[in-house]
Image (tube, rainbow, N blue to C red):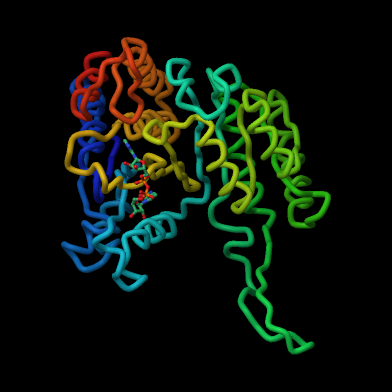
Length: 355
Ligand code: NAD
């Protein structure tokens, strides 16, 4: 039995999650055993419970095997005290569930190659997975702060630190994913300058001994940033720490030019995951049935692959999306002359039919 927590969230969240649930309903009707429990997160939760990650939602998420999230946030919440803002709900759930591995695919369907700012031949067919460590690095290292130094000058300081266990567990996630894909892994570091990442590299090389089939390479982060623009198709899986991953995963996602198409997953040690589109709550188009539900539906495919080990089901969902794109259906964000413009729910209809 797959226990799935469903958090529609704010803005376009409920619209896109509705379409993703229709895809899951197809699987359930065919006999896959799953339960859905809905709970509020973000602004929606603040409105109902006065907190962006209320106890009810915590309970539902802790008891679930996987969590499907729409998006959180909206201008009406921008003036709330920081701890009550919708994004705090996201931080709360990540911490609560121990989600340390962030998986951000950047893939570009050949039909959408014109949406990228790069030349179509550079990006068409792009299929990269960036694995970013999410709970360590300079973002969390202690000590940190601002102070007056011994010379009497003000300064800011942070600590870049990774424990061996933290590097090992993210390396394992990345190698496991590489095994499910093209068996190529590039570990990104700055080992020429930063001891923390020299250490990172050493541990990754050690973990590699357990994965003889995976071809491991190493790249400095500045070069990786260049190579992602110059020749992104050279990469299969990339693994890196929190701060480099933050920057590189955003860079990689923009290679595709279609924010409505990009899924993401954050996993913990038991493979429980939070699955959500990479985009936000798009308040400008919320409630208009205009949003592209594909990123959310691709997140469901990731859920099947990474939390439930149903590779064939994941591929089936991805193939249904490919088929619908090949047939020319587009929501307005990816619309081009000569294609057929559809609403959010009509895109859902097409994908369900293609399943
Ligand atoms: P956004 O991703 O919501 O929107 C950026 C632009 O992309 C908008 O023009 C929007 O209409 C468009 N867009 C986004 N998703 C789309 C989709 N599925 N289909 C069609 N068009 C889509 O980013 P933003 O405008 O910077 O932020 C809006 C709100 O979302 C803010 O409150 C922000 O804090 C929040 N946010 C939440 C998350 C999250 O929940 N993980 C991530 C980023 C931003």
